[in-house]
Image (cartoon, rainbow, N blue to C red; front, side, top):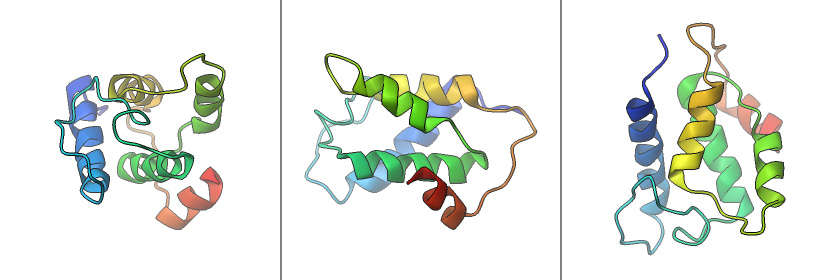
Length: 109
C-alpha cells in the first residue's frame, strides 16, 4: 500500500533530521525548508538523501532527471515540499523492488 502524502513528508523530515543533526542548522524543518539555501546542501548531500529515500522506500526514483530539471531553473534550490511531491508522484504501490544501500549509491553516482 502506497504511503499517504503526509506520511512521505514525515519520512523525508525524519531523514533530513538525521542529516541536519551534523550541521549548524537550528531552525525548524518544514515543507518550506530549502535544501540548499536553508540547510546548506551540496550536490553530494542531495545524492545521499536520494539514496536514503530509495533505501527507505525500497525502489529507485528517476532522480537524475529531477536534478537536471532543478539545474535548469533560475533559482537552483529545492524545498522539502517539492522533494516530497516528486517522491509521491513516483512512488510505486506495492511493487517496489528492494535495493541494497550499496546498489542505490552506486547507481545514483
